[in-house]
Structure formats: structure tokens, C-alpha cells
Length: 350
Image 1: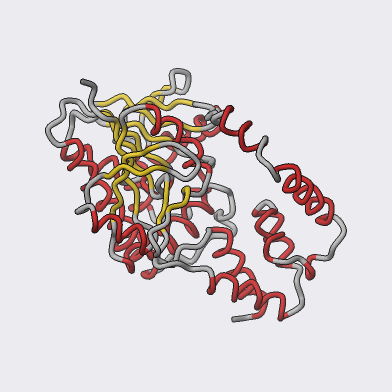
Image 2: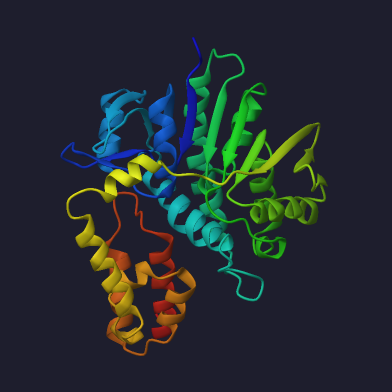
């Protein structure tokens, strides 16, 4: 009998409301992985992001349990509840405002974040804590297996692979990065120690995957420039200690049939028309008149440029209030909302 595949990510395939109802997990990562997780024996380990997730984890003794997703598919899920304050530091101080922005060229050496004790503490007592909690769950699930396979996902879990590798040298680790990988200089905004731990955490994997060849090339060049490692650009290999780490470009597909079925649902045409109308409106209204939802629909660069043009204090305070009012148990909001509020605060001098 084949051993179950272990998937690990910050966000799981489902999340629970306080009343026990279940909804599909949000985000492109969930969309990308649900097909794999529902068509083979897999255990999906994820952070408990709501009170409902925590309650389900407690109900099942912190062990994996089967759940039927509202839109189809059955999954074996294990929720891991980290300390709420640690999770807040992990998500709202380090993973999103720091890593996500570095990887979208929103921080650079000419516009570097002010990294002081607060941010270093968020890394040490937030990012590392959550990675360690999820790594411990992975190690429990692969205990007793020979040469287990673990697939790690995205920027929230860069240091987890090294934690797992230290305890299980025989594990096969694959890490897919679902966002861009920027060029070397973008990473120089981080303190060298933290940056090295992130890179060597990733390099504990056997294979590292990216969406495109350019992201793959950037990562290889970063290993050469920032770590001075031996890199074979043509083969896509980084020599790290006594190991070869394969770096690959894997254009990530979607579930074509599932997407088509959504398009055929009642009401899809109405939603499509509304989206088209919204896009048309975007080119005709002033930045000061943009409601919150329009900023969410813009690219990050365009939204930030629009906010920096705002002069109406009420509009700026609306963005700040929106960020404060859209936090769940762990203070989880989008990276975009966090940064938009920071730009708005800067505009009004708060």
C-alpha cells in the first residue's frame, strides 16, 4: 500500500465558521492543490486560521480528519493551532508585509522597510514558531514511514524544510513557491542572518519549483550572489553542502473541468457582466472616489500609486479603518490591505 502524500501549507482546503459550518479555503494555492489532494491518498496539514478551525482540531485531538468540501472533494485535513500572538507576528508583520512585498518588488534598497527589533522579533517569535509548529505536525505524520514524501507550499513556510530535514534526513521534500522570485538586490533589504536562514531553509528541499523560467533563473542567481554557492544555471542545480538541489519551472495548471462547471452555473453571466462593468468604471472615476473593493481589484502597484494621490483625509481614514475592522481571530488580513493602510497612514501623518 502506497504511503500517503503529506501536503503542508499555511492555508488549508477548507475553513470552519464558529457555528461549525464549512467553506472552501480561499486563494490560488488552494485552487491549485485541491485536485491533487482529492484524487490520491494525501494528508493536508495547515494552520488553524479561525476559531472554528481550532475547535475542529481540538475535537479530533489534533489529528487528521476527513472533511467534505462544499464544492466537492473529500480531504484528510490536520489543522495546527499556533499561539495567536505568534501567528499574528508570523502573518501580519513578517510573512506578508516583509516577504510578500520583497517578492513583488514593493521593497528594494531605495525603498527599504525599517527592520528593527520589532521585525526581528516577529521573525524569531512568529515566523519561526509557526514553521516549527507545522514542522512538528509533519514529523508526526511521517513517523514510521520509509523515505516519506512531503510537499511544502509557498512563502509562509520557507524555514520548515530545514526543520524537517534535520530530524528526517531520508525525507523527500518538494517546495513550490506560488509567487514570483525577485532578483538578488531585492533580498538585500533583509538582515543577512534572516535571509540566509530563509534560503538555507528552502535549500533543504530536494526540488524547488517556481511558476516560470525567469523566477527559476532569479533564484539560482540569488544563490550565487547572496550565498556564494556553486550553481549550474543550465541544469538548474544548486550544490548545497553535499547535496544537489534541483530548481525547476513548473507552470501550474488549474482544474479545467471544475472551472468550466463554475462558468456554467446559474448567475455566472450576471457576475461576469458586473465584473466587466466594474473594469469599465475604473478608467473614469477619480482616485479619491474609489471604494475599497476597487483597490482590491487593482494591481498592488497601481493601487499604491492611487492611494498616494489621495488628498481627502476621510478617504484615507476609510482605508485605515477597513484594515482594522477586517481581522479575524489571528489578525489575518491580506498583505495588500496591510500595505494600503500603511501608505494611507503615511499620507495623513499618523
